[in-house]
Amino acid sequence: MATKKFLYVNRKPPHGSIYALESLEVVLIGAAFEQDVSLAFVDDGVYQLLRKQDTSEIGSKNFSPTFRALGDYDVSKIYVERESLELRGLTKDDLMELTYEDEDDDWAEKDAIRIVDSEELGAIFEQQDVLLNF
Amino acid sequence: MSILHIINKSPYERNSLDTCLRLAQDGSGILLIEDGIYAARKNASAAEKLQSALEKHKIYALEPDLKARGIDAEHTIEGISLVDYDGFVTLATEYEKLQSWL
Image 1 (cartoon, chains in turn purple, green):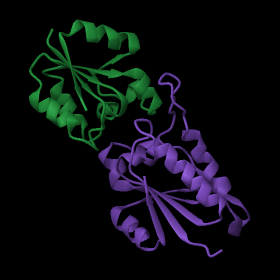
Image 2: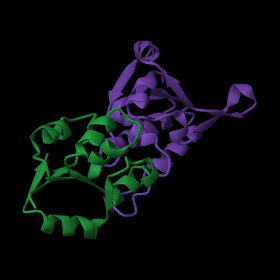
Image 3: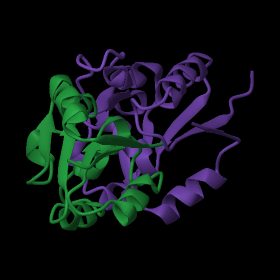
Image 4: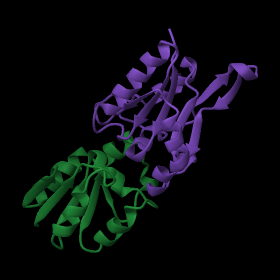
């Protein structure tokens, strides 16, 4: 099977609707089929990656720890738009640490999150074969 | 007391907070719940309008929704009162009317 480049574009906050959780499920399916998967977090989507989410009092599943599993599925490119963070008063330090092991570099543990500006992210969109929006 | 305005949408995705702030009369209350709580975060671009709204309104945010979204009390704008579910019910009884901006 030919490998295609898939970019999942996430623009919704995590717990007010089902989009964020559904996106993550589809990402994991795509990655299991050994496609070249990247994620982009834009607008309120950046809130999905905030640390210390605790949904115990709102009666819904806290899926945010599942993002840590992405590295095990060889998802090593998680793009976060700088402008979206800044508008919300957030920095990279507010986000969870997400890592992967680089097979081309003796399995060194590396940071999967890449903060990119709009122009860089726009160029990344152009490089994809398939764009999926959530 | 007058109206309690309830906001459940992110200020970065919908204009419900803006419309509420435009129409809400002095002395009415504003309660942020669900994705509405993102407006309560300090140092963000929406913080300024919340800050000036505090001069005319009592503003509340539902703490379980803040915790679910990873926003600590220390990250919320000073002057916003955090309430739990019991506090939500109490507010609903204290104000004469509720306006839920969807």
